[in-house]
Length: 92
Image (cartoon, rainbow, N blue to C red; front, side, top):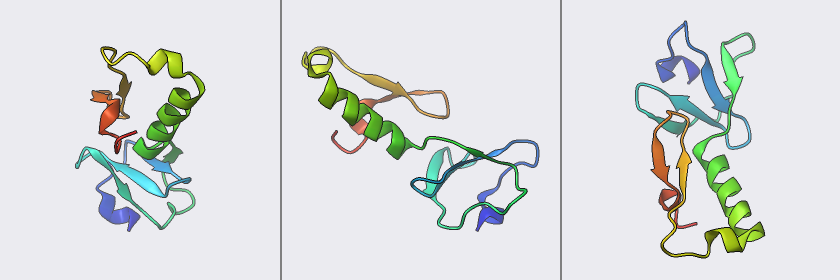
């Protein structure tokens, strides 16, 4: 499975072992990857989009005053470096 992820030999595979997802640069998104990268492969542990959504949900629960204003829009940086609306993480 990992060999089909189109990972450049120069770049390192970003893999979230918590949610078993890998970042595929060619697709520009996280994909399910139930098989962990093979030992010795160029893999780096990374927080996936699901991790980011859970962190945002936790922050909103712990600090409701920061997220109470409807005029305030919360943005988060995804691993590709572009900004994404935090509301796009499944209605959190």
